[in-house]
Amino acid sequence: MSDGWLALTWIVVIGVLGVAVAAVVLARARVAAARAGAADGERYRQLAERRAAGQQQAAAELGRLTERLAAVEKLLRDVG
Image (cartoon, rainbow, N blue to C red; front, side, top):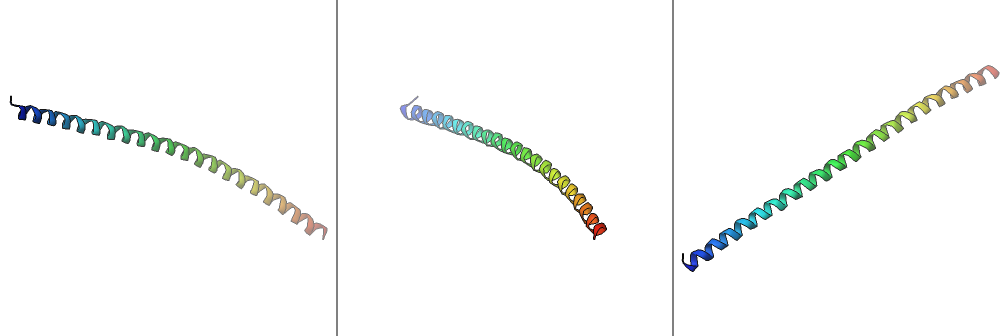
């Protein structure tokens, strides 16, 4: 093999290895991004569950206050 072909062979081998390394790096970056997205999704789901529970508690408290207010209004009508 002549020196020209040997150099060309090495250039091609190094180029192929470079492309392979770049592909692996990109694949790992995509996997890391997907994992981060999944973790964010899980945190968002937990936050949404806590907010829904808080809204239910607020609605229940509002219902109790409405009942108490109605009782006070009735008492005032009866007295007045």
